[in-house]
Image 1: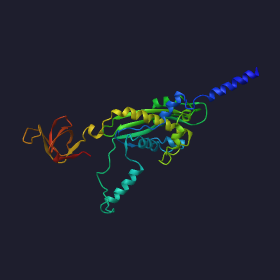
Image 2: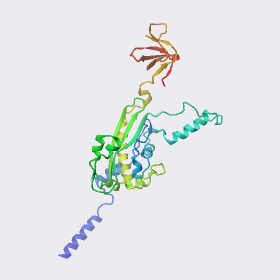
Image 3: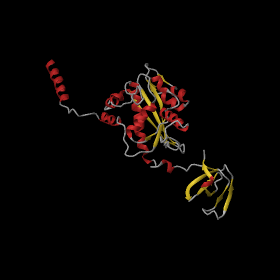
Image 4: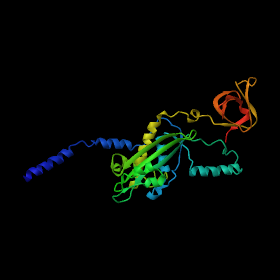
Length: 313
């Protein structure tokens, strides 16, 4: 009887050894793909990544998620990244030197050079927990964000397992339209799958200011959640306009001098109304030499000389 059991064990070992080395479970293959930062064939626009209002990452011993998402943006080539953080502050100091006449001639630092952001991307946390214990946490995020719905989501998390539910919100800076709000989820067991280890070992997160995301377990879980959200977001954004500036409404203008609104682009034609200095107008985009077609705050449409107005501030 013992000999039969021994033969059975040996047969099992031989069968396992004979399996192809490249065979992987389907779940592992799917997770391996999801661990890769997506790469876009063309830019979706210019984006500024900013910190959320609540600094939840400090309690986890992590760097700001702003730095983490900037790594994703740079490596994906999906957006042109503009700095509105510490780099912007240093740049403003340099421009102050230029404005004060303290830079050398020909430095070419001045007004009208800063590239505008088409979108603002905010990485935030729906839920995260890396504390020991078996009780469920309720209302954690509700207290953090003042959102009853978010608190309900957190209430289903068991603190024995490290999990992260994050959200990326993309807002159009011109229209204030929320273009995307995408959630991502990851858990402790996700970290061990597929190519995740390789991604963390070569990520460069720490050198980019995203400390703790590659060398702590909860940091890795949050990273995978953000990666899922970012991947889903850029997949959904394929329909964005090639030129976000041109696709949005034209910026409002203000009359700097009294003038007239004409029915057509002929100043010898019918006058619709007189316009006072300070009147706000909204260009339609139609132009004839110096005359622009505009509407006023009452919805009246006509033509006004662009020599009499300036961009509203």
